Amino acid sequence: MNNVKSELSQRLYIETYGCQMNVADSEVVVSVLQDKGYIITEDINEADVILVNTCSIRENAEQRVWGRLDVFKQIRKKKPELTVGVIGCMAERLKEELIEKKKIVDLVVGPDAYRDLPNLLETAGSGQKAVNVILSKEETYADISPVRLDKNKISAFVSIMRGCNNMCSYCIVPYVRGGERSRDYMSILREVEDLFKKGYKEVTLIGQNVDSYGWESGEVNKTIKFARLLEMVAKINPKLRVRFSTSHPKDMSDEVLYVMAMYNNICNHIHLPAQSGSTNILEKMNRGYTREWYLDRISAIKRILPECAISTDIMTGFSGEAEEDHNETLSLMQEVKYDFAYMFKYSERPKTYAARHLTDDITEEIKARRLTEIIDLQNKLSEESKKEDLGKIFEVLVEGISKKSEDQLFGRNSQNKVVVFPKNNYKTGDYVFVKIMDCTLATLIGELIE
Ligand code: SAH
Ligand code: SF4
Ligand code: F3S
Image 1: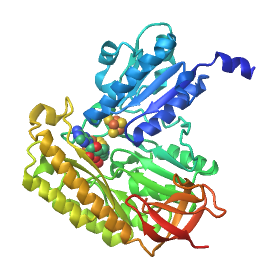
Image 2: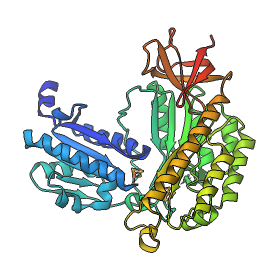
Image 3: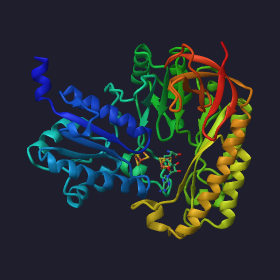
C-alpha cells in the first residue's frame, strides 16, 4: 500500500527566505501538506511542487526571490507539469501581481492562509491560478505540529505569536503579517514538551515583539504575560535551553530579566534591536523609545544579568539621518558594547508610513559609507567581546562537527557565541564544559574540561 501511495504522492520542495518566523512557518506548511500525502524532498529536480517562502523586509530580499523564480522557470522547461508557488510575506505584498509579472508562478499564498494550501494546490494542479492572501485576526496555527526541517534535531523555533501592531514607520511587517495575536500558552507548552521528548535540547520562542505576548487564561484578571510564559517553558526541564527573540526596547520589562536570572537554562542572551542611537531618528521611525530609554534598558540587563550577551539590529540612512544622528548611533554602539549585530541600509518599502510621508533622502553612497563605519565598529566590538572570554569556562551545547576539521565539534554557549573544541567522545546534543583559549572573528576556540 505504502509503495502505491508514494508513487501517487506529489513531491514537495520548499525553500525559505527571511526571518525565523518564516523558518517556523515552512515547518507548518510541510505539516499541513504531509497530512495530505505530500512527500518532502531536498532535491529540487525531483519536485512536483516547488514552494518558496519569501521575505519583503528589504528590496534586496525580494530581488533574490525574483532570481530564484528564473531558475524555477528553467526547471519547468524540462518538467511542464511542475507547480511553482510563492508563499509568505512577498506573496502577501504583491498578490496577483506575482502571477502576472512572472509567468512561472501558479500559486500565491499569504502567511495566514497555509491551511488552505492543499485546496489551492489542487486548483493550481488543474491549470487554474490559485491565490489566497487573506490575513486573519486569529490564526496562530496553534494546533498544527510543525514538521521540523532542521538538520541536527537539537534546536527548534517555537512561534508564540504572529503579526505586529507596532507600525514602525519604515517596516513592511504589519502590512504583510497583519495585526499581533498571541498563541494559546497551553499549545506552546505542549509543543515544547513534545520537542524535549523527541530529544531536542534547545527552543527559541519567537515573535516580532515577544514582550507584548499575552494570553487571557479564562480566569478573571489572569493574563499570561511573556515573563510567566518564559518561566513555564523553562520549568519543563532544566536540560532544555530556552532562548527568545525579538525583544522590543519599549516593552522589555525587568520582570523578564528577573525570570532569566532565576533559571539557568534560560540563555544569557538578549537581542534588543536599537535601529538608531539618535532620539530624533527613533522618533521618526516611530519606535516608541528614546536613546535614554534604550540605555536604561541596557543598564537593567547589565545590572540584573551581568553575564548576559547583548545583540542588536542597526539600520542606517533612514530619512533625514544627519551625520550627527549617525555619530550618535556609533556612540550608542560603543556605549553598549554589543557582542553581535545585524546591520542594514534603509530600504524604502511601499505602503509604509515612511514611503507615504517621508523622503528616502540619504544617497546610496552615504548609506554605504555609514554602513561600512558601523560594520567596522561592530567588528571591533565583537572582537573585544570575544577577547574578554579568553580563559573563561562555558557550558556548550554540541551542535555538530566543525566545518574546518573532523576532529573538532562546534556548539554555542549560553551567550549564543559559537565555540569550537576537540571532539573526544562527545556527540551532537551533549552538554560539555569548554575553557576558551583563543578566538577568531566569528568563533571562540577552546579545550574540554572533563
Ligand atoms: N520585530 C523586530 C524586527 C523585525 S525586522 C524589531 O522590531 O526589532 C528585522 C530587522 O530588519 C529590523 O530590526 C530592522 O533593523 C530591519 N529592517 C526592517 N525594515 C527595514 C527596512 N525598510 N530597511 C532596512 N532594514 C529594515
Ligand atoms: Fe517591524 Fe517595528 Fe513590528 Fe519590528 S516592531 S516587526 S520593526 S513594525
Ligand atoms: Fe521578512 Fe516577513 Fe520575516 S518580511 S523579516 S520574512 S516577517
